[in-house]
Image (cartoon, rainbow, N blue to C red; front, side, top):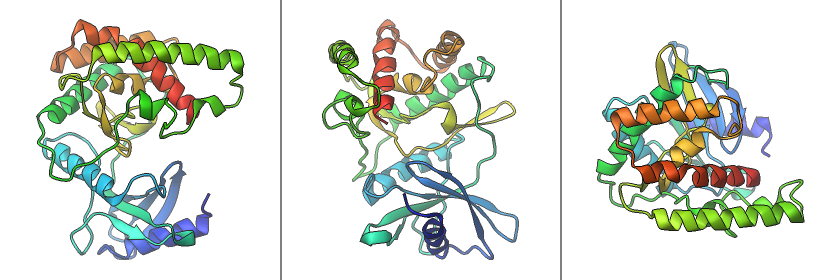
Length: 289
């Protein structure tokens, strides 16, 4: 892991490309990416994201930002990238050992991360917002050169999974490997039958767990589109349950999400039937993570 002093140095390098007077950066999280809160003497606030090295290239990040710009134009509460003096939104910084890191500055978004104590009714609001997100995805003409990762069994839980191998997780013994392998075979068969028709499979957020939501009063904002990519639309509901699939309120969360989604979008019986397969696939993907 890069030390804090090096991260702050990279943040200062990135901020030098923006017309921000007397800007100060405060480290707020280190996960796959590193996030800073940036405050200026004039009282403006931003979020600076330092991307993990070697995961997304500039073309993939540019594609994420293009979708965010298009979503923002529709009035959805999503992160808004801020261009630098040169009019571009992606900074490429020299990292330790010559490995480059990309950086993006976003307008600050108010709100707090919900916990599992959230009113289950809030999942209805998330379902409505997700339906709007999906409707935009289905109708949006992606710009030339648009490229994002695809989230399928091969990239989520297969031998070339992007988040690593679930078999290597602590405590996964021979019996567990056999059980999970058997489960994934069923998942693969069900998803193959469900298919990838355009009304079922397209560009999604892909990581709409509680940590990637900001709640402020009656508003819910979606953040962290870093893993947006091509997958099944219902995958966004599976991701919303991440780490809490067995919570006592999870059935109510799902019911409210589906009710909210159905009020703004269309659901087929097949979409409901595929949910258990998507939930367990996500759970196994997180085992690798």
